[in-house]
Image (tube, rainbow, N blue to C red; front, side, top):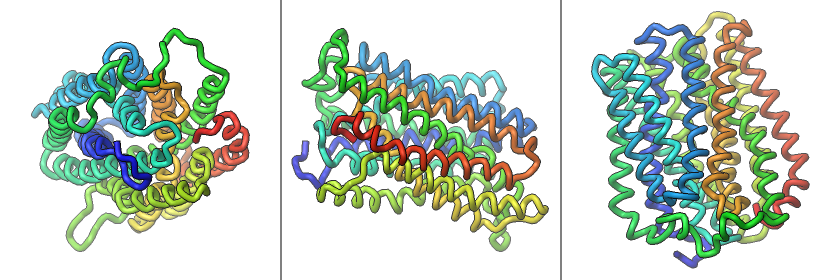
Length: 431
C-alpha cells in the first residue's frame, strides 16, 4: 500500500475500472427501462413508475444478504465475482430479441440477485485499502465515485442511443457486454493489486475480532450514527432518483429536444449527471484532501447536510420549469441541464462521503453487512421515489410536484446540520 498522503493504493484504480463497467450496465439499462415500458410495451405511466420503483428498490435490498454472506462465508472478492457473473446473465436475458415478459422479469431478477453480491462488497474492498484514520479515505471514495460515473455516462449515451434508435435488445445487450468487461478486468488483475484483501472472511483485515465478541460502547454509538444518517439517505435518494422516472419523462414530453434537425434522445439527459461528476469529482477529491492535510476538513455529516441543501436548490429550478410545462409550452433544455448540475454537486457532497462514512464507523467484523444495511436505506428511497413519481398526475401540477422535493431536501439538510455536533460526538473521532 502506498504510504504517501497524496496518492492512493493501486487497488483503488482496479476497483475504479470494475465499478465503472458495472455502473455502465446498471445505468445504461436504467436509462431505458421507463422508456421501454411506456413506448414499446404500452404501459401506463403509473404502472411503469411502480415497476421502476420496485426494481431500483430491490437492487438495494439484496446487498444486505450479499454483505452478510461475504462477511461470514464467501469473502468480499469471491462475492463480487459471483455477483458480476449473475448480473451479466441478467442483462443478456433482457437482450433476447422479441423479448417475452417472462424473460424480462427473469432478467431483472438476475440483475437484482447479482447486485446483492456485487454492490456492498466492491465498496467494502475500497474501504479495506485504507488503514484506520487514513486522511486519504474520503478522497479515495470520491475518486472511486468518478469511476462509477464514467460508467454511468457511457452507459446512458451508448445503451440509451442503441435502445431508442436501433432496437431495445441492442441497448440491453450492450449493458451486458459492459458488465462482462468489468469481470474480465477484475479476475485478471485482482491477485496483483488486491493480494489477500477480501479473499476470505478471515483475511479481510488483520484487526478483525471474532464475530461472537460483543460490541463495545463506542462501536454501538457509531452504528447508531449510521442508522440515524440512513434516514437522511432515504430523503436524499427519494428525491434524486426522480432523474430516472419523473424527470426522464419530463425530458420526453415537456422539453425542447431539437438541435437543428437532430432530436436528442430523452435518455441522454441522464448523462448530464455522470458528466458533471467526471468533471467535478477530481476537484472535490482534491479539495477534501487539501482540507484534510491542513486539519480543516468538515465532518462527513456536515458535507452530507450541504449535499441535501444543494439537491433542494436543483429541484427549485425544476419547479420553475414545471411552471412552463403546466402552461403547455416546451421547456428549454437548460432548465434540466442546470438542475442536474446543481443536484450533482449535492450528490458529490453526499454520496461518496456517505460510503466512506460506513467504512469509518462500521466495526470491521460487520463491514459488508453494515454496507448492505446502508444500501437498504437506498432501497426504501428508491421504492418511495417510484411511489412519488406515480403521483405526478395526481398532484395535477408539475410545479407543486417538484416543489415537494425542494422542501424535503432543504429542510432535511438544515436538520442534519443542526444534528451534526451530536453525531460527531457519537462518532468518537471518526468521520
